[in-house]
Structure formats: structure tokens, C-alpha cells
Image (tube, one colour):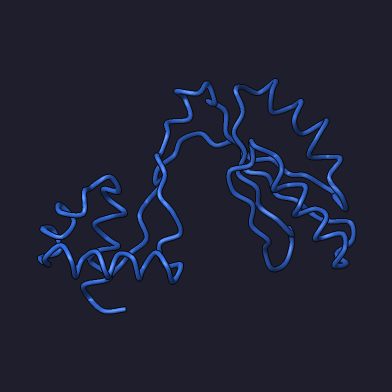
Length: 151
């Protein structure tokens, strides 16, 4: 990956809806070489996809919690079952396995506190291998959806 590829990535992260012609102009290439580079970045998995970034409040999802999960047991089968179950919960926006204690961090959105409480009581606490859930409520997003540093 060279400086031009990094520039393409930086521009697309900021403005993913640019036309190929606009992208080529921004990175100072003609359309054909820009298209070849873009296709290569897509094919090798560097660009994993394109999506709209939606305001959660527009969907009524105004409550956000970070949930730290401590597992009762950490055998392979339990961890895989936990991860598969978490992946099926639409309200989980982020799930990361951590070194040390706690074992996982989940970023969860719901409509309100009551919806979150129901999700925790009925779904999260019943996930395979869960020993303890520790929730922290998000007061304010300071940095959110930041593009990756491409340079």
C-alpha cells in the first residue's frame, strides 16, 4: 500500500458517496488508475464495505451502555457459544474480547433504561458462561465514528 492508496482510503472514509470521477480528482489520478486501485483495495479486503452512518436518535435509540462481561468459565466451547449469541443480538453495536478481567466489552443501544434493563435481565444475563455483567452508562459521545488514520 502506497501513499496514493492511503489517500484514497482517507478520502473515502470521510466521504464514501463520492463518484469515481470525484474520487479520482481528489487523489489527483485519472479515472482508470483510480478505479484499478479502488477495486484492488476492495478485493484484498482493505475496504470491507460501504454503509450509511445513521444517527441512533433518529431510530429512537437514545440510551447507550458499555457492558463489561466476566465469564464464569473460559473454555473454547463456552467462548464460541457466547460470541455467537452476542453476534445475534441486534442492540449490540460492538463486542470485543479483552485480555484480563473483564473478559468482554459490549457497546449496546436501546430506546431507554427500561428497554436496557429488560435486555440485560432477559438476554444478556442468560448468555452462555456469563458470571457477571457490569454496566456503565454513556453520558455523551465525545469521539464517535472517527475514520481510521490512513497516513
